[in-house]
Length: 299
Image (cartoon, rainbow, N blue to C red; front, side, top):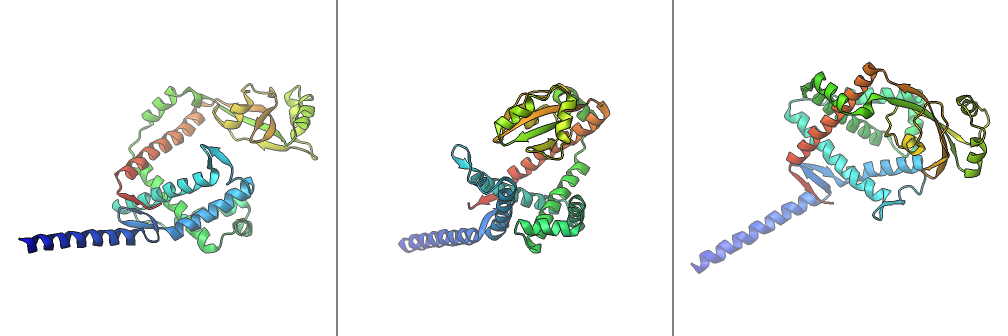
């Protein structure tokens, strides 16, 4: 009996050790495992490097170190959001496979072509990619990841069964989607310069004069049509067409805003709101998939 107990104890120890070794092996070199598929630390670091360079170039070298929430920096938030994003990417891939949807490599090529068109050609795209320190392999991987997201969204759209009547109900229940605004903003580094210009803004025509000046000591922002919760529009606190706002501070700049047009065309607004509604439903679908997935996180 004693020998049997010792043998059983030894087996238990071996099983625990084997499990620990397996866990250690899974952990080694990976940030997570999603339904049996590993996400490598190497791929995470490559994407992180890309986004760090991108945000530093777009917002300045000090952007990532800026504290914004409970002593967390933009870098801290980027790192966490990237892990979450990569887990969701793997969940998307798994969902496509489970539904026998083959990933189409041509989608990545289409995304590249669209970027070339937006930036004015292949050479311009190459220059922009080079400027943020990416080689072709890294950039192709980013395009591939984007293509996965696009294909998974398209799969959802094709199988969601969402009806136009649902969209109409959603539109009627959300009044903020019944009107859109387009605006221009004069952006100053110095408050005194903003005050000098603001004194001269008595009408939409005055504002237009400053938009068209060839020599400027300010930047100009021209928006697309947005809703009333747009952050700059809200900060300017003026929704009346043709009325210059007071000077307001936003992102450490001094701004003057004017609304130049409205969109109250119900057909166009319904088309826009359908896209919003579908994206909201897609996020719900994706979150349910993540919740159902077996995820082991190592970071």
